[in-house]
Image (cartoon, rainbow over all chains, first blue to last red; front, side):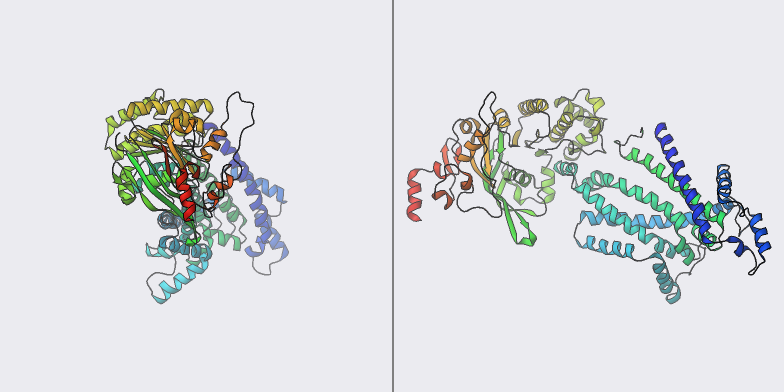
Length: 306
Length: 334
């Protein structure tokens, strides 16, 4: 167990290193931030002064080394735009993003897993066909389009729900649907295929031969086995929803991390973009580790020694 | 002579594929019976309908298959008329089945205790301490050492032979009168096979359970079974006591099967039956075996033989076994 965590941590550090290198380089391809931090038409010496102030005049390797060393001390830098530490900005927005992501995850779980189960148990039946339509549209309809249609129908025409912003639970409904539908669809597909595979196995045949009631065969012998891949997807989904709900957060003016990232990219706010991406990377790594440990509890064959 | 515990009469199980355009008669009018405590060997090549016969009896046919006719009487009750709910109560309680692959037939996520206890829990209503004791007894009866400790293990912690003994314990857990063993030793090592067969024999002596032994290994039939039924292309071509059939088989297919057994110390090359089993959706006219039969006549390729007695509790489905008069009679009619 200890050896397992050690090895995984080493892999994670390598992953995060590559990630930091990539994001450092990519964000610098967006242009010169000094142009956005000064008045339009500023004099070259003013631009140079701003660059020097934020350390953008130094060569890239030096900048990268500073960036990396600062991360190791827990400092993600200061946002050009907000003039505040990036970590402070991030953790200020994190609860909002978590709230949205958790409600979207809950929604996708409540729809995706039971519907997938039902589709698998009633293969090619009416439920399966309804499930296929839901999944196909969920995977095919882009979130931004769905979000706009939801706003049009429920806010503009029916005036039932607010168009955006953060408030009570009513503000949460449409962004959760816009964000969660895609993930509900993917969970549905995965639950269905995983369950179908399990239900064809010999041990399900033996469970039926024992004369067990149908719900015991499906819910205990079948579903528990089908759950392993579903859990992985759900865990990764959650992280993606926290950190990458960019479009949905922008459409619904949701003050989350996605919108922070969006603003950062448009402002060429290098420390902000770098910091958000690195923290997202850390979260993905940690959640994956957590899911791997969770596997061992579900499936006794998985031994966390290597 | 006691009345048979299981009696299968003219059972027909058909698979319908391609939206009903193609009907495969996997089991086509077979009849056999089994007394309490008796062992019947169901023998034949792959794809001759052995497994479909077993699944018909336990009522777990795949969705494409259905019982098209005949009856399956278990202690006098016709199983083909039972509802799925009633069949569920019979499976595990009155009929148990041992599957082919011990590696795949245990659920990897449940420990041995849970898996062995389930039939007793759901069918016999045994709970807690008595359930624990029952599982221990069952594991002991299939020769699992230190059962109290072993029942906390998971399947992946056991060898193939041990797992198949666990499957045996599961089969016994509901106290059935009939166990269907579908090639239970095919995936085991030869030494383990012998042990397992001995174990099944011991269990049968202790509990008086009847066994249907599905196999293509005639050595196992000779060792285990009282009677045997030889299947070919969905039909039983010969059925009788193992002693009679091994001594003087009536059907050329039985003869060919016996001839293709490896004999210890023999230098002769192994005999193989020429050709392939026929396509069940497109059977040859007359006797289904005639294209591969060494003794086939013109008559065999035109007329399907009936089942005729060849002795005490012994039947064959072959023109050669027919009395000569009836042959001539059929010719006259044709």
